[in-house]
Image (cartoon, rainbow, N blue to C red):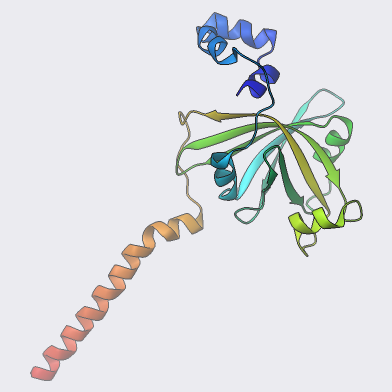
Length: 204
């Protein structure tokens, strides 16, 4: 978290922590050499299961902008311990994030596992590549899809949030996984009941 705190804990943030009683705890975490945070096995496994995230950028007006990105599980690729990438597809063609990143490459991302009530925050520097810029990397991330571009994110800081205030929510796939055993059991009981009915009719 040292990379994250060195970037996020500005003097104003530290003053707020002191005012509200958490500064001492975070000061202990900040001791020692400050180094960029890296993605380990826990982060890679977590990201491999995500099908969406939120990314914030800042425009030249100074206003932040948050965009949702979604796809199949694992659409965010961990290229190495400091690098993430994901394919970007045509949407409403406002290109706000694209324009913001071209002016200021700093972005913030948050990934949430709602059923497990876990979330991972990432601070990174983003660059945008077209297929012609790096065909091999583009193909690795986007495959043969109709992606317009690929975002490559250089991780500068990560932070795992506590589960407080995360309301569990479930995707259709996750609901299906949860109820499938019950549905299978119900079907088995229906077949058993039908077999007993037929056996009863045969005997009568």
